[in-house]
Length: 136
Figure 1 (tube, rainbow, N blue to C red):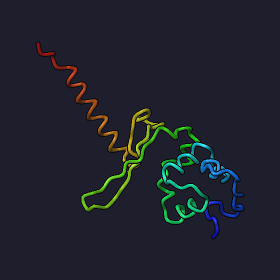
Figure 2: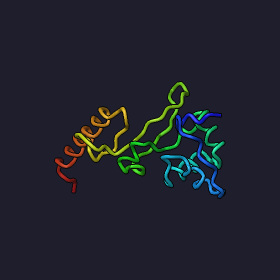
Figure 3: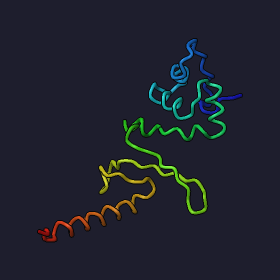
């Protein structure tokens, strides 16, 4: 079976140890943290099992991206899975915004405008609460 994840690269040689993290680290671009994350998230121990996970779509569930690695933000986001009113599964990624007016605040990717509205509304409520005289 071909390895589409690496394009023209050759299939990594099989390491002699039985540690899944070491096995996955033989793949170009996979370091110890991502290898551990793949093993923990998918409960796979071999290159064959990892290949099967890539083909059936489970590999996409691993909570990590190249961009997160580039930004050094691999521990600064979370994926929330949910079901809508029609029982369809969905997911949203929550991150700490790195730019713009919401910088430093938690936002849902793709819903930044709505998050901004929530922050503005909560800021207004807090201002009103602070301006009221305290009850004795």
